[in-house]
Image 1 (cartoon, helix red, strand yellow):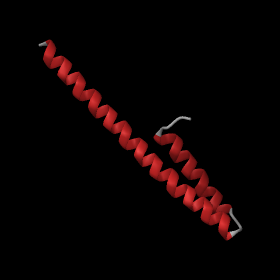
Image 2 (tube, helix red, strand yellow):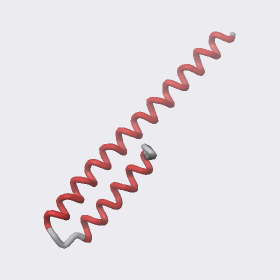
Image 3 (tube, helix red, strand yellow):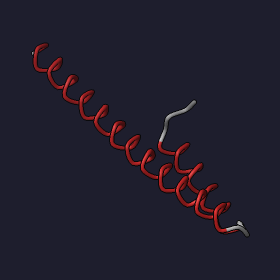
Image 4 (cartoon, rainbow, N blue to C red):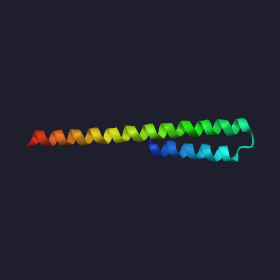
Length: 68
């Protein structure tokens, strides 16, 4: 499974659409809960990606400093 911000956002959008289309209250509630969870996962994935980029930049700076 692709654990990316885009993947999780797509799933959240699909859950939101399903909630809008739902005719039964319990189905709508389930889809809204799913949307909330997917959005939380999307934000966590975005944070992890940003942290990886930050660490990679710091490591590159340390390698460059060590080379000089």
